[in-house]
Length: 379
Image (tube, rainbow, N blue to C red; front, top):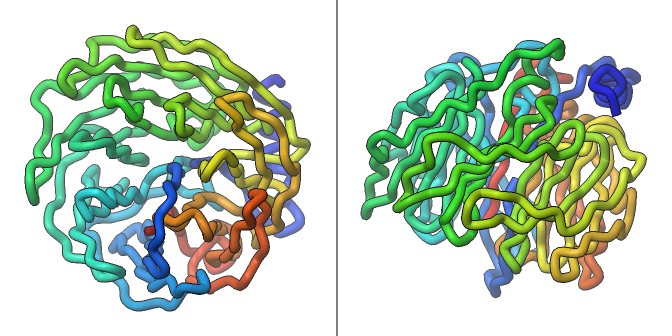
């Protein structure tokens, strides 16, 4: 699909609502036995960025418990309305270390919170070592941030006890050359560390590539291995076997084996689903879900040993402009943040991967309210 055609598809779905759409992405969820948990939503406020905290009841429904300032400012990429950072992973929860990472795009910083249930304690504000951070990935003790402007860059950090420390000489430029698309489509969308900690992957949207930096003791190679991947590769996640799952805004889903050298070998590809602007994803127990901002829907894909298949082109309907998704750690519940209507839609997940809506909570934010909203994470 040509980029001009894709831009038309991306923007068409929300015209009736008077909104311009943008695409972005989220992480995988693991099984567990927890009955209760928490959900966090980032405001991306341009003056005072904050995180809204919710208790998750045993039935999956959310109750707001507080708001925590990040100490930084949010940002909006030029042309973006529904998803101001045009990214996935702007709010990332590290359950192993009980840490929450939030990007401050307007301050070029990352805030690190300690997590206790739905309560947050601000511990650190770190430089992102670049211009406009939009995505954070955590694997083991490694943390990587993606900066969107200036051609894009990544920077690494290491978790050492209660502190997160920058990895010396870990910043790498992506050197993305501006194209004819608006900034929100030009900018890279997500950074993701492979489950084995051996590589960092970046999705570049309308540049149509995946960049893989092999890691040596946490430090990236001097230059990436670049692989062409669809029209607008947007959302990255990993399945149980460690395969890379990529959701493209055109409605395609692909799986790749990541080689030690940074090469990507295509395993399978399915779609398109016929839904518009498939840009955010989460994988749970053999099912990959993708949010479609232009169709106000969620699609589902089966993942059997990294062989993908379409389960349901419309597994669920959502509020206006669905963007970031998150799943509870026990895999029972899925939460969909809507950048248009500014709500969090709550779904219970069936044993076959089906989604049943059980409610929604209104954040008072979103494009309809004239206020940004970006990023969701769940435990």
